[in-house]
Structures are given as structure tokens and as C-alpha cells.
Length: 426
Image (cartoon, rainbow, N blue to C red):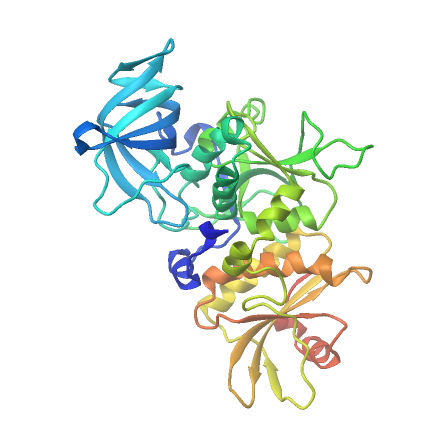
């Protein structure tokens, strides 16, 4: 899938040092959102008579006005800014010049940056891009929020689905959670969960039977939201005087959670918006199985910087406690939170591994699963943990895995230093 063809270095530079999964403890009424937001999903672009400019044709969701400042999102590219200089809208089957429009087909005139080529399925919106992920700033996914509005119109267009796949796989979603302990707010206003907090996720019943759902079961989906404005539309979620606890989770974390159990049949993106988007697990499997996705995000324990440690015969390795530093502290917190959120994981240990001959230093994560777990069932967890650790792994950026019970030497070291190496245990 060509849309995924970005260099891994470029992706790494765009990553924030924030955790991949962040707890938010917000009141919906106090969310920092725009009072008016809109999305135009580009359908085509034509040249004006005389070649003096371009007319951009698209489908508008929300309300826009002439002279609005906008941002243009295209898969695989850095967003660019522009301004709407002229506007036509469809009204009662006719195209009329207007100063504003709402939920209709529109034709826009805009000054595009020099050298910029606008493509079909680009998203034009007044929602600004985010520079990385800041736990204190509400999450936004403007391109994904815009692209999913086209599902009823372009559901048979392969190019549309390729664009959906790109934005879904790069998303950081908001999902409401239930917790049995109050969140702890630090001095920076960032919320975290106390040790051994139980976390529960919501589920919704799909109105249609999704592919892959057994005949005797309902299709239950995990509700995911692109922004707080979309979450606000879930009437009845919030009770008087209650705060909504949410978790910010990447697509990779979502996919791992879905694949590690048999509770959910898929995901529902912005399920209470005018155009909800429900994607079954086979659709998500198609996304993660593409060469482009595998190249950018990795596909399991044998891809990229991830593989299960085998300790080749005759090769000398040194195992030790990771040094005390900001990076190691952040990784320990991520691993601890991941363990608490996944009941099937029984323990997680964190070590440093050094190859004596090459002096290469790597992080080594030791996972413990129930005996009946297969390697295929473990792979999604390895990938999800890697995606969470990756943004904070700067000094050491190679990560390996071992499974408790498979390598006696590693198990012995962990046992000797369990107070420093075991970061999570049931």
C-alpha cells in the first residue's frame, strides 16, 4: 500500500516522547474543543477557465465560511495551511455562490502552496494539526474524522479504503474506561492509575452482523473517538457530577487488545456521529497485513527491532539491571501499565542485554503468559509494547523479547534481581 511508504526515520522524528497510552481525567463540559469545526472530503479538483486557479469539489460535514483558515491533510504528507477565498454550495439541486455552507456538497477556491498537489480523499478542515502528543492537550485526529464521513459514498472505492487504512493505523483514539480507583494527578496535571487498578472498557452492540462473528453471538464493538467533540455526542455516558475517565490508545494497542481476546468483533469510530464507521476485525487484519504497514509499524516478533531472544549457542551475552535514567523510568511505567491492562499477562520483567563481542546494548523485555498461550497469541502483545516503548527509547532503541520459562539463564537472572527487574506481576 503506497500510502504507508514513509521512511521510519521520518516517523520517529514525528513521534512524541509521551506515553503511547495516556489516561485522561476530564469533564466533557470543560474539554478544550472548537465551537465550530468542519471537514471537507475532497472528491476532485478542476482548473478554472483561463487557468487562473483551481476549483476544489468535495463533501462538507459541518459548517464553513468564506475566508476560513484551513488545513489540508493528505496521507503520507505534512499538513499544509490555506484559506477559503470563494465558496459555492449545492442547495435544492442548484449550485449557488455563498458566504457559508453546512452539510452539503461544495466547490471551493483556495490558494494552494507552490508545488503542492491536491489529491482525491484529502481532508480540508479548520482543526489544526498536533505536534506530537501532549498528555495535557486533548487528542485530535482531524484527517481520520474527515475521511470516515465518506464511508457511505465511497464504500466501494479501493482508493478510499487505502486512505482510511492509513489514517486509522496512524490514529491515537480516545476511549472511555471504567476504573475502580481514583486517578492520581501529578504536578503537571497528568493523570495516572494507582497500582493494581482494575480497568474496564465499554462495548456497543453493532446493528449489523460483522464478518467473523459466530452465528450464535452478537457483534460487539469497541467504541473509539477521534476527539472530545465526537465523544460528547454519546448521550447518557456522563451522569450528573461524574467525570469521564478516558484512555488514549494507538491503533496498534487497540488491535493487540482485540486480537488477544474474543470479546470484540471490531471497532466503531465516532459511533454517535452522523456518519459512524464500523470496521470488523477482518478489515483490521487487512490493514495490518499490508507490506506498507509491516514496513512502518512492524508485524510481530520477527520484524523491525522486535524479535524473541534465543541466545545462540556459544554467543556471550551480559544481562543486567537497566541504569537509572529518565528513559528507563518511562519504560518501566509503560510496562507496568500494560501489564495491569491485560489480564492474560502474568508478569513483565525489564533488563539490559549487552553482546560481549559487539558491545551492542538492547532493552530486553521478559513476558510471562499462561502455559496454553501460543507464540501467535503473544505476537500482538510484543508489537503493542514495542509501539508504546518506541517514543521514549532514545538512548537504546533496540528491543528484544524473551518468554519466561524458555531460557533458564534469563529466568535465573530475573529471580536473583526480581526486586529491580520485575516491573509488573499479578
